Amino acid sequence: MSTTVKKATWAIDPIHSTIRFDAKYLLITSVSGWFREYEGTVVSSTDGFNNSEIQLTIYVQSLTTSNEERDNHLRSPDFFDAKKYPVIQFQSNAVTMQEKKITVSGILSVKNIEHPFQFTATFLGMCTDPLGNAKAAFEMDTVLNRKDFNITWNQLFDKNGLLLSDEVKVHCDLQLLKLS
Amino acid sequence: MSQVKWTLDPMHSEITFKVKHLMISTVTGQFRTFNVVAETASEDFSKPGAIDVTIDVSSIDTNNEQRDGHLKSDDFFSAANHNQITFKSTKFEANGEEAKLSGNLTIKGVTKPVVLNVEQGGVVVDPYGQTKAGFTVTGKVSRKEFGLTYSAVTEAGNVVIGDDIKFQGEIQLVKQAS
Image 1 (cartoon, chains in turn cyan, red):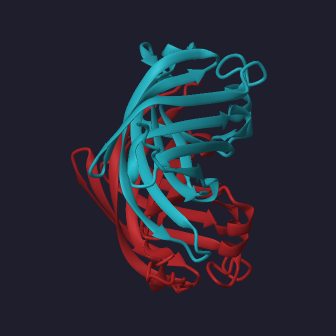
Image 2 (cartoon, rainbow over the protein chains, first blue to last red):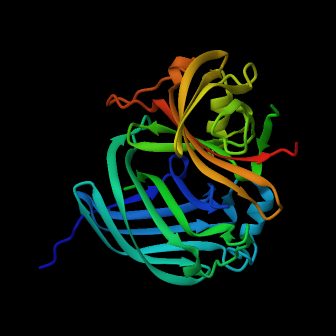
Image 3 (cartoon, rainbow over the protein chains, first blue to last red):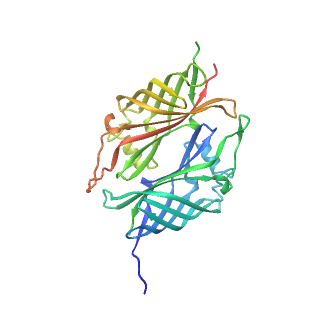
């Protein structure tokens, strides 16, 4: 006997979401950037996000760090090589939710290099927006090593300091819009 | 006693703010154009003199043109009439790597005293031979106290846009040649 689980489909609302990355520059402060364009969906059951499927595509060209020269350097083969690898993608293979904590495992693909990627996110609540749409909010923080994805550019300064950190902090504030 | 003057490195500095949306989400924005000048008695920022910040309101960027336009309008900042946010320091109390920076913040023509938290990142020499000082500055204000009172509530009573605005500055200053 098969049981059909009723599904709900959600889209990431980019107007009320942020995908941000931070790297240390000169060891003394962080420089951050956002991706302006991305799309993602979450297919969940109708009674919660346990066992959901998450898919995210980020358009690398859309990165911004508030400085055109740096943005172009990041898009270049020194870093993301956006012409050759225009998207960053994530596909989940396991999602578990316990109370407000969500554990996600999946594959992250940057510059066509696939790496298993696991992170935890926090469920912040649901509500109905002024237009009558159901919305759900999540936030997550994680640290990636850019060398895992062949983004290795660096410079030395002041004898032994590395100009740019290998570790990149990623922070996402995600607001999902229920489509069905 | 000669003062050491510092100016902003805009390429490695940023001012970010966050506000709650629908009480559950956080919307983030930045001011892309701003300036900071500082004077210190020595190179180590242990006893800074004046610290002046000027922010260009029309440089606001929340990754959505329509929302940015709304924020610049009279509903919020009224940028046509008040295009600058300014901060002028009055006191700096250092406690090791952490400090409290007190000063007067002016938004939309309203001035109020605020206290900001400062984490000192250190002073280093960059690949171009410049002496750089780095700081992380954080604070929180109530937007309604500065006349940004636009309000909306959903049918269920969720406040659409929060009152508390948290902000963070990652600031790198360059020492000027004396």
